[in-house]
Amino acid sequence: MTHPDSPPVLRQANGRFAPGAPGRPFGMQNRMSKRVARALLRDFEANQHELLPRLRRWFIPQYIQIVARLLPKPEHLGGEEIEGLDEVETAALIAAARAAMARIDAGHGSLADLEAALLGERHNSGADTIGD
Image 1 (cartoon, one colour):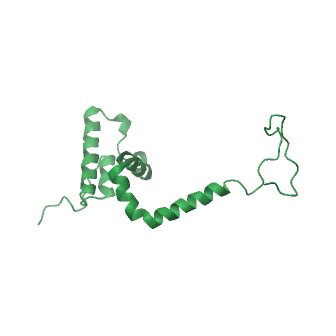
Image 2 (image 1 turned 135 degrees about the horizontal axis):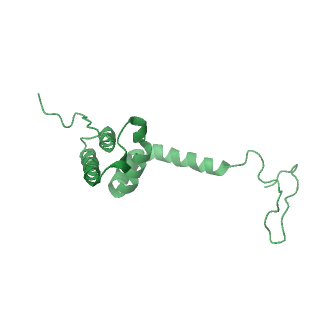
Image 3 (image 1 turned 135 degrees about the vertical axis):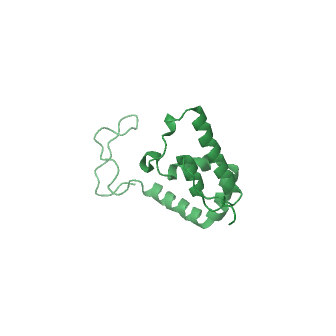
């Protein structure tokens, strides 16, 4: 896939590119990977209502990992540093996160509840309120 105006590609006897070879033509970098990424995003947009519940049910560690990557870092929000917690505080944080996930699975919680649990805060989405 060489351009007619490009210089010939220099190769060594073993077939490897020689030092100083011109490399990839300008603008060709990542064309295929960008096309694949756009196709994946279009597919996800079309099927997200089916995919997300299945991901949450059958691939919970990966689901939590994705959610954790999307949440803001605690140091940016003034939340607790997880590395600085002792065993009791870590167990309480894990219990709060599990409770938040259980509320989400039951349809009574939200990602805001999970975020608050991971940040060591109390978040009330209305699911825990007692009738007036």
